[in-house]
Image (cartoon, rainbow, N blue to C red):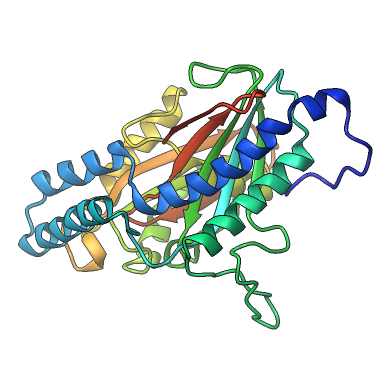
Amino acid sequence: MPPSSDTRPPSARDVACTAAYVAVEEAAKQTYLRALKVLPPDLKEALVRARANETDPGARSFLDIMLENVAVAERDDNLVCQDTGTVVFWLEVGEDCPLNLARVSAAVKKGVERATLEHPLRPNAVHPVTRKNTGTNTGRYLPAMHYESVAGHASLPVDALKLHCLPKGSGSENMSFLRMFVPADGVRAVKRFVLECIVEAGPKPCPPTVVGVGLGGTADLCAALAKKAVLRPLGTRSDDPAVAALEDELLAAANELGIGPMGLGGRTTALAVNIEWAHTHITQNPVSVNLQCWAARRASAVVTPAGEVTYGF
């Protein structure tokens, strides 16, 4: 949920960061557009590997179409998919970042509005009761924004901000699940639940999917972690050995289900199973699953207090 509005006069430090807020707005616009048009290299490589390993002729044909779709979108500067999604941002905030997060939220929202109106993009954001469309892919609590304070790392200076844009198409986002297990259910119940979710989803999320799993925490944290998991580059593994082993086991099992590309059979049902976890209460073990379609769209940008922007995935 975005930070509450800050009505206090801007500080001298905040005024000095004015260029950064302009840059955040532009970065939000560009990451949204980039995510919709250019797929990450790791995703394209995963599709190529899946095509090479697939034994079902029909599945190979669908993977060929997917790869051609990606190439045509990049060549023509066009969208990979017509569903421009519900826009989600995961923001990493360096521990010394001087930016006001209320102003960051406003800038991100403005950037999404600009992308929608200037491109233009299909508007998807509607009132949940009246179904009236805002026309901007923004609205109350949209785009969804998650903030995480970090110590800084190789791709994020300690005084900078990193935006991860994740457009979630409806077909995959509708296939979201949460189950509150108790410790007595054991890890076996977790495995069974994740696989049952993939089976229940079937062709609806446009497989082969990236399976994001949130494990532990609370119900709301667990769901957010599942969403964060689909942002992780394909081919990476959890830094926790037990969780990494579970990722490998679930991916192998998912690809034995026979659902295949677009749900029409084959050995490629999932491109990855990524798990993000949190410690949890002694009497519970929440598990959430968030599926991402074969066009696992994402883009990122690092913004410094001086307004410098570096784009990536």
